[in-house]
Image 1 (cartoon, helix red, strand yellow):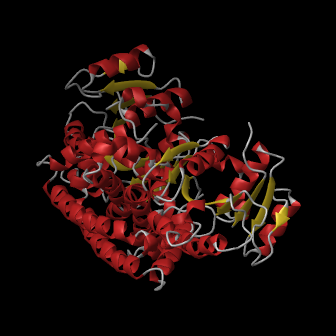
Image 2: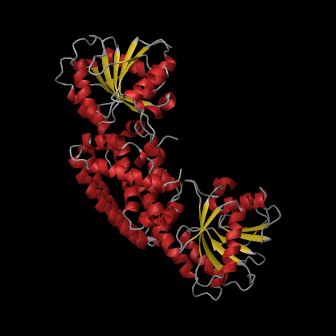
Length: 292
Length: 292
């Protein structure tokens, strides 16, 4: 396996960025990895553990890097991508990518930059409910799908370079329009996360919360699975919801309509079979949708 | 390990009943297992595989059984429990138990029976998204919690016998009031199931369903986890929703209120930090609630 890059700079070595450093280290031991993070302790750990080669001092530019990965929370990433693109000593052929779960606003944010062609939006679909450098591990990207959302200024060559980068790390790459990505991600990821939190909140505000022991006895694998997303980073999800509000808000309205419809079906069951039909329809649809 | 029962009759050898037969067989090879089911093919398989010893012919009573387990869908179980309690050749010391996910209506249904003392409501919290005899396996009950919901007519001795029965199968038994069980189960299990289906339905009715390939690329472990319950038996969940409607309907209303509140928070994020606070609160609460 070979790579087109000699030096990689990673901004933010949390779960996604830190795991990416570890993976690059394993696949391409000779690639030089530079890193920046507001958490200096994580940077020191990464340096001591050999996960990175060099710390980029605060405010300094990733001067020698061929590829620059911005892996900070998605709202903050907008500013950092802009800052990096405006650094005068960035290599003229360097490519900046991100790992954010929302794409259209990030891609749009570079459109006025003279170097917009050097930014390619990426969304590696990987994660656990944990966060931070210590939670990272290189297998996080095993079989991960990575969505690349090219924009008008990107050349085919640039997109291919980035596709190769992700593929060389043994991920499955798909190309998609940024707006379409955000619309689908709102349904398959952002809404489910909010709803996961809602299910916890319903218990929390039930007035039964004083009987925690009793409730705890009745939370099985179903509840644990339905609320796992609610255990993941509040900052990340708050950011995502804010940036992708345009797509999420109409879905929340649809949920309300659907719950009201469900209410009627529950009231009429079991004599009226609409609820049963509904459950069959969603089961059949899910079978076609979710890969085993 | 010993048991107080020589002969056990199991009505319904689907996922729960069939797995129970296998587990009894493993723990107590000398116990005689009789079984009834509307699916004669499953009965034949169970007999051939040595999972049961004897088929109870349609309409016949479980004459020799010390314990009779009704493991049919919860709406149908009401009628079957009533039928069994009224069979004149049932042993006078036999105990009938069920495995239903809703308890108060089932317990209430036996209150007029002269043999109501011989019925004890049970809810083994075990399951997968599959159903039917072939899907069963004895480890389904490994570390399962079993809620026993005694009623006024039950003697302490009867409840202890049933507690011992479940404990001898290495499950963790808890005693709880039937109504309280149903109220908590609505929050921790029945609502999450309906919501799991709703998340699938939102995708199904999105108008994007024609782009299944594209959507499929964007369903990761989060979506799969949030919709796993929607893959389980429609009959079971329709039954549960119908029988526990009293507890589920107010929760659906609360979901609507909560989604409307969420909508405001998403709109105001990230400048207004209410969504972030909300996500922190639910994460903290979940940590105390869900056992690792």
